[in-house]
Image (cartoon, rainbow, N blue to C red; front, side):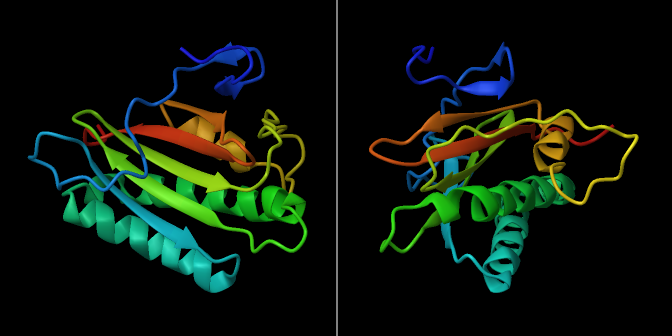
Length: 171
């Protein structure tokens, strides 16, 4: 369980467990003794977003999880977009910001992670359906699609935002 100094938050006032998989470890493909995982460094550009989507779809196809592709790509796109919009501008001056995308598979869940140089907590803003906002819906979409999501600090600077999707087919 995370300590109060290093919380993992789902949304304001709610706590969620940190995912038990190591999202950046190189692990064997499904069927092995350990969870499978894959990682990609994402450039802060349109090309980087496209690579993140293709990487996610290709990895899920290799893991026979095509049925989770649309939701996973949408979640990854929202997490990467948030990192580029909010965390990269706050990165230390003179450093090249890096965003790392991770996918980890255990028997029942797919964990999607995005690590960025920003230290600020993600801000969950409940969706106000009375106004169609252009911005501010990303974590609402993640919250709607994921079984759980949260974030953990990444000392000395940065954080990892994660979301867990079930691997079972949609019913």
